[in-house]
Image 1 (cartoon, rainbow, N blue to C red):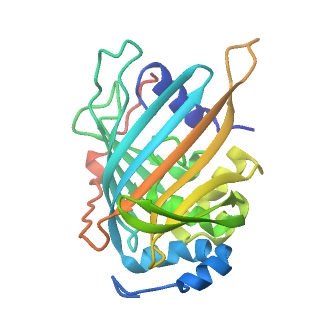
Image 2: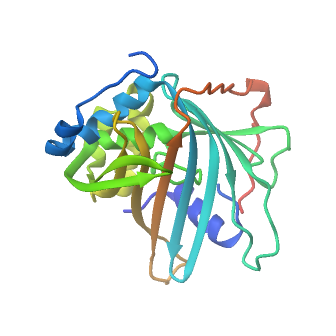
Length: 278
């Protein structure tokens, strides 16, 4: 069973129209030797280590492939892991002719909610669209065109079949590379209160299939890069077979400890009307 209309609509819209629906700095976790000997522990400890660190800058990349169509959505911003708040500027791909460049969407990420500005047709330029992430059967893992960095980390709480894949470098930083699969149900049960309902919704949308991941941790146990690979079947027109959609969502984290000030919009600035379908 794939994600519901909201998540499927995001993938289709991107393809066709380019609109997508501790103390800081302290060391933590196991030592390098322990991380190599117990890779599952190293990976499952990573979300808590990130929260202790407090904040970082982030870059995201979400690549969607369906049939012969492949598109990439990129984002950049900051995240406050203790507050569970982030802000990303998400850049959509050009249209099919390659001639039109879309304005970036500003996304505010909060426990249980996704706010989007410049959402698309029918929304005033000064208004925000608010989505309840628990109402999306993908838990906003793909709907917004970027996986919430804290959610991406918390998925690791459900890591299974974890193996150590050797040393590597991410943006010049030495890291240890781990691979495995995410049990979404286990991740939802172990998630923090702010992410629990959204990940429980993702379990319903993606089903019981495990989600492959690659994560790169530095010597302090901090996540420097993480990639999840999601798959679902896209419903086509009546009489047409479903189309498989593969999504690779990658998050790069850097600039740890830098201030990440995120202000949520006032209620009066949230659009209450109907959002036009792409």
